[in-house]
Length: 179
Image 1 (tube, rainbow, N blue to C red):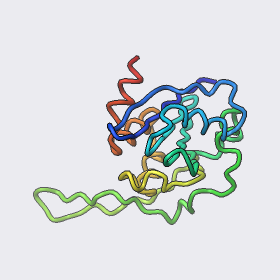
Image 2: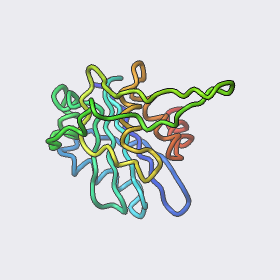
Image 3: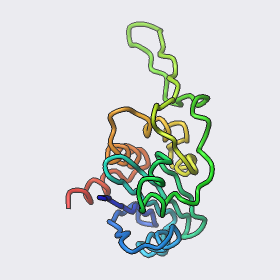
Protein backbone atom coordinates (compact mmCIF):
# COMPACT_ATOMS: atom_id res chain seq x y z
CA UNK A 1 0.00 0.00 0.00
CA UNK A 2 1.30 3.39 -0.91
CA UNK A 3 0.36 6.51 0.98
CA UNK A 4 1.29 10.16 1.33
CA UNK A 5 0.79 11.88 4.68
CA UNK A 6 1.23 15.63 4.77
CA UNK A 7 0.87 17.79 7.87
CA UNK A 8 -0.22 21.38 7.41
CA UNK A 9 0.20 23.36 10.62
CA UNK A 10 -0.76 26.95 11.31
CA UNK A 11 1.07 28.93 13.94
CA UNK A 12 1.88 32.56 14.60
CA UNK A 13 3.95 32.76 11.39
CA UNK A 14 1.29 31.23 9.12
CA UNK A 15 1.13 27.81 7.50
CA UNK A 16 3.95 25.30 7.12
CA UNK A 17 3.92 21.75 5.83
CA UNK A 18 5.91 18.59 6.36
CA UNK A 19 5.62 14.95 5.49
CA UNK A 20 4.72 12.56 8.33
CA UNK A 21 5.67 8.89 8.48
CA UNK A 22 2.92 6.62 9.69
CA UNK A 23 5.10 3.51 9.67
CA UNK A 24 4.67 1.54 12.87
CA UNK A 25 1.72 3.62 14.12
CA UNK A 26 -0.38 1.50 16.45
CA UNK A 27 -3.63 3.49 16.51
CA UNK A 28 -5.18 6.83 15.62
CA UNK A 29 -3.89 8.39 18.86
CA UNK A 30 -0.34 7.41 17.86
CA UNK A 31 -0.93 9.18 14.53
CA UNK A 32 -2.27 12.22 16.44
CA UNK A 33 0.89 12.22 18.57
CA UNK A 34 3.00 12.30 15.40
CA UNK A 35 0.93 15.23 14.16
CA UNK A 36 1.40 17.03 17.50
CA UNK A 37 5.17 16.50 17.22
CA UNK A 38 5.30 18.38 13.90
CA UNK A 39 4.61 21.70 15.65
CA UNK A 40 3.63 21.32 19.32
CA UNK A 41 2.65 25.00 19.64
CA UNK A 42 0.53 25.12 16.47
CA UNK A 43 -2.93 26.65 16.63
CA UNK A 44 -4.25 24.22 14.00
CA UNK A 45 -2.67 20.98 12.84
CA UNK A 46 -4.09 19.11 9.86
CA UNK A 47 -2.95 15.77 8.49
CA UNK A 48 -3.97 14.80 4.96
CA UNK A 49 -3.46 11.07 4.32
CA UNK A 50 -3.87 9.89 0.73
CA UNK A 51 -3.83 6.16 0.11
CA UNK A 52 -3.58 4.13 -3.09
CA UNK A 53 -4.97 6.92 -5.29
CA UNK A 54 -8.39 6.03 -3.88
CA UNK A 55 -8.86 7.27 -0.31
CA UNK A 56 -8.36 10.43 1.71
CA UNK A 57 -8.42 10.84 5.48
CA UNK A 58 -8.09 14.20 7.23
CA UNK A 59 -7.17 14.57 10.89
CA UNK A 60 -7.35 17.84 12.79
CA UNK A 61 -6.02 19.01 16.13
CA UNK A 62 -6.72 22.44 17.62
CA UNK A 63 -3.85 23.52 19.89
CA UNK A 64 -2.82 19.86 20.10
CA UNK A 65 -6.20 18.72 21.48
CA UNK A 66 -9.60 17.43 20.41
CA UNK A 67 -8.79 15.06 17.56
CA UNK A 68 -11.31 15.23 14.72
CA UNK A 69 -11.27 12.79 11.80
CA UNK A 70 -12.91 12.66 8.37
CA UNK A 71 -12.62 9.91 5.76
CA UNK A 72 -13.66 10.15 2.12
CA UNK A 73 -14.94 6.57 2.13
CA UNK A 74 -15.70 4.02 4.86
CA UNK A 75 -14.32 1.31 2.57
CA UNK A 76 -10.82 2.61 3.40
CA UNK A 77 -11.20 1.17 6.92
CA UNK A 78 -12.28 -2.18 5.50
CA UNK A 79 -9.68 -2.47 2.78
CA UNK A 80 -6.41 -1.56 4.48
CA UNK A 81 -4.58 -1.59 7.78
CA UNK A 82 -3.91 2.15 7.47
CA UNK A 83 -7.58 2.84 6.82
CA UNK A 84 -8.61 0.76 9.83
CA UNK A 85 -6.04 2.59 11.94
CA UNK A 86 -7.32 6.05 10.91
CA UNK A 87 -11.05 5.43 10.50
CA UNK A 88 -11.74 2.22 12.42
CA UNK A 89 -13.21 3.97 15.48
CA UNK A 90 -15.68 6.07 13.48
CA UNK A 91 -19.14 4.54 13.82
CA UNK A 92 -21.50 6.73 11.83
CA UNK A 93 -21.56 8.04 8.27
CA UNK A 94 -21.06 11.76 7.82
CA UNK A 95 -24.53 12.68 6.58
CA UNK A 96 -27.32 11.24 4.55
CA UNK A 97 -25.70 12.07 1.23
CA UNK A 98 -28.97 11.98 -0.72
CA UNK A 99 -30.19 15.00 1.24
CA UNK A 100 -27.04 17.11 0.98
CA UNK A 101 -26.98 19.97 -1.50
CA UNK A 102 -23.84 21.67 -2.67
CA UNK A 103 -23.08 25.04 -1.11
CA UNK A 104 -21.19 26.32 -4.13
CA UNK A 105 -21.77 29.88 -5.24
CA UNK A 106 -24.50 30.05 -7.83
CA UNK A 107 -23.04 31.06 -11.14
CA UNK A 108 -24.84 33.60 -13.33
CA UNK A 109 -24.14 33.85 -17.01
CA UNK A 110 -22.69 37.25 -17.93
CA UNK A 111 -25.19 37.67 -20.79
CA UNK A 112 -28.29 36.34 -19.07
CA UNK A 113 -29.85 36.18 -15.66
CA UNK A 114 -30.16 32.38 -15.64
CA UNK A 115 -28.55 30.57 -12.76
CA UNK A 116 -27.42 26.99 -12.30
CA UNK A 117 -29.36 24.89 -9.83
CA UNK A 118 -27.34 23.21 -7.08
CA UNK A 119 -26.39 19.63 -7.81
CA UNK A 120 -27.22 16.81 -5.44
CA UNK A 121 -24.22 15.13 -3.85
CA UNK A 122 -24.84 11.45 -4.43
CA UNK A 123 -21.59 9.68 -5.24
CA UNK A 124 -22.30 6.15 -6.37
CA UNK A 125 -19.46 4.49 -4.49
CA UNK A 126 -18.40 6.89 -1.73
CA UNK A 127 -19.50 6.53 1.86
CA UNK A 128 -17.77 9.38 3.71
CA UNK A 129 -17.41 9.03 7.47
CA UNK A 130 -16.48 11.24 10.39
CA UNK A 131 -16.55 14.98 10.97
CA UNK A 132 -17.25 16.71 7.64
CA UNK A 133 -17.25 20.08 9.44
CA UNK A 134 -13.61 19.86 10.48
CA UNK A 135 -12.56 22.48 7.90
CA UNK A 136 -15.67 24.69 8.10
CA UNK A 137 -14.04 27.47 10.15
CA UNK A 138 -11.21 27.53 7.59
CA UNK A 139 -13.57 28.25 4.70
CA UNK A 140 -14.54 24.73 3.60
CA UNK A 141 -18.05 23.89 4.85
CA UNK A 142 -19.15 20.25 5.09
CA UNK A 143 -21.14 20.42 1.87
CA UNK A 144 -18.11 21.68 -0.05
CA UNK A 145 -15.83 19.03 1.49
CA UNK A 146 -18.31 16.31 0.53
CA UNK A 147 -18.73 17.74 -2.96
CA UNK A 148 -14.98 17.85 -3.60
CA UNK A 149 -14.53 14.30 -2.30
CA UNK A 150 -17.45 13.08 -4.45
CA UNK A 151 -16.26 14.82 -7.63
CA UNK A 152 -15.79 12.12 -10.23
CA UNK A 153 -12.28 11.87 -11.62
CA UNK A 154 -10.45 13.64 -8.79
CA UNK A 155 -7.69 11.69 -7.11
CA UNK A 156 -7.07 12.13 -3.37
CA UNK A 157 -4.04 14.28 -4.26
CA UNK A 158 -6.32 16.57 -6.31
CA UNK A 159 -8.79 16.80 -3.43
CA UNK A 160 -5.99 17.62 -0.98
CA UNK A 161 -4.62 20.28 -3.34
CA UNK A 162 -8.05 21.89 -3.78
CA UNK A 163 -8.83 21.85 -0.05
CA UNK A 164 -5.40 23.21 0.89
CA UNK A 165 -5.70 25.98 -1.66
CA UNK A 166 -9.07 26.94 -0.16
CA UNK A 167 -7.75 27.08 3.40
CA UNK A 168 -4.55 28.90 2.53
CA UNK A 169 -1.82 26.25 2.68
CA UNK A 170 -1.87 25.08 -0.93
CA UNK A 171 1.59 26.41 -1.81
CA UNK A 172 3.17 24.74 1.23
CA UNK A 173 1.64 21.34 0.39
CA UNK A 174 2.57 21.72 -3.28
CA UNK A 175 6.20 22.50 -2.35
CA UNK A 176 6.22 19.42 -0.14
CA UNK A 177 5.08 17.22 -3.05
CA UNK A 178 7.82 18.58 -5.27
CA UNK A 179 10.58 17.57 -2.85
